[in-house]
Length: 83
Image (cartoon, rainbow, N blue to C red; front, top):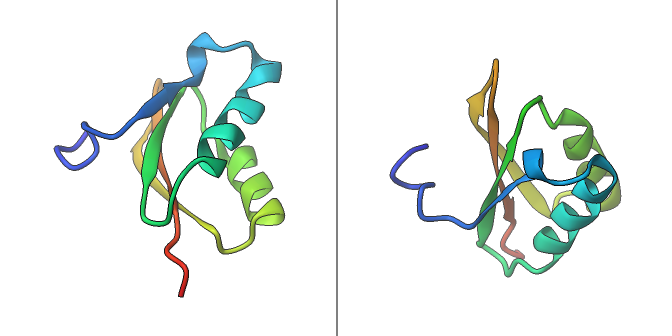
């Protein structure tokens, strides 16, 4: 992780039952204020989650890959500031 992201809250979904992962991530995302973010740690590319976020909350969240496998993926998910 970078110095910029190492102090951010994170959720390591590798330790969470698969059926509980998206609800927990969405709960964390919905709790963010504008400009806040957290890091998702996973053992595979969480691209389906990104598509789901875009579909349900268009334009509300940023999605930045910090690490892209092959064993660990880290994504910084942030709430956009309102214009």
